[in-house]
Image (cartoon, rainbow, N blue to C red; front, side, top):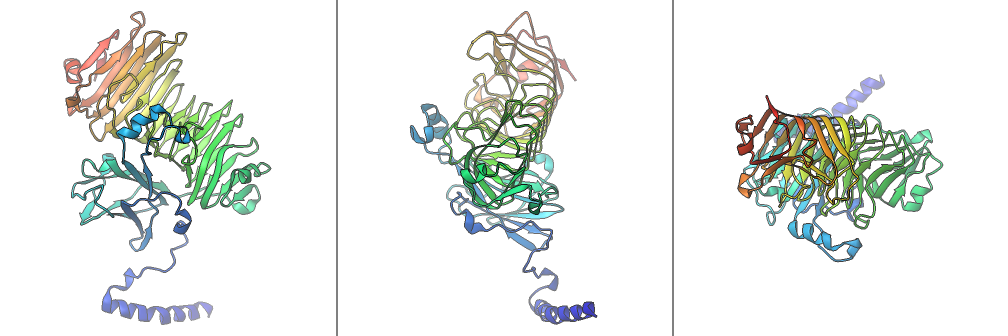
Length: 515
């Protein structure tokens, strides 16, 4: 009887709505006033007025074809150089001059199934609308429609996507971070988590008696936070914006996860790495969060057996803003890495980087093999999409693949890289150079066995840079190099053309194998 009465009530309420829709539209297009329970909760936009937001883009996510959610679109702008401000040094003057007035804009959300993304260009003062719009990475096969100042496309799977409006639009670009739906959100009623709202550093430190910390949606400011050794779970709720960094020192087995943001914007330059694990802090699991406004390393996990997945790094403009380093037996997957120093670091053995999207500014190697004392065997890097690489010179620490070695000739170092596979690497836009493997001969640096398979590389040869694969020590030539289905500017590399095609300078290497 109760069910019958409910149906009668629904009929009474919906009948006039459907009659109206017959006159002015279709009943099935009525948008519910409340989203279904399986949608992520809405974010109180008023709470984020202090966080820089985009004046260039508006982004909406449309779920189930009807429910529209206007997203927060954040903006990171290249800082203005001021000697001494937040410990800026003279070295910071150079990148801030190169990227003056540049911005990167971004939004993040979670979903399952299929969603429609609508991007509106709000202002054409910095970016002119164009019918030439690409959604990268191209391997995802996403083709947008453009109508006036609006770009629309569908997503069927999570990923990290760049909306590229014209060839120069990346200078005020938009990243869309589409996360998989959460399946491991903590239960705050369990009593094991200290739930924090608008937390300060003292609030975070007071959480020490608990096993976990739960940052609720809203603004927090915790500074450089050394995670107490009994805390093994740090959760950033979707909508949480946490100013500060997370340091594990002698604290293994910590899980940092969620869909919130960790920002270094209020810290001094090079004051702290964003997420760091040192002193036997092994088995760190870093998952899902966005690391924004970096002023030093984004992720520096120098213990063993770490897992990094679905992490987004964005908004570091100055030098020393490295990407992700995770040491022995670690995996890094489905991440977006923006860096203005070395992007992907593989300094130890049995490391895997898989399904990552990268954006390199003018400093650092995209894949950095060594700055001396890097000893690694059995490294696999597969399915890497390079959106942009903006090197303005061919110094020894640049290039898609770089090996610096003992750059400053300090001596006493010993580097070894063997049995590497770098597979399925794509440059979406032409890069200035590909190989800068030329370690300083002051200390031995050896490479034995490195396969470059299924590369699709574009290099802007008009810039005039050469590529380098050079061993510094004639007694230990690089050997075991394999070019397998390596395509350079549309031409497959062979034994007959590789030197001239890639403008390659070699020294002390055994002739590679070409397949």
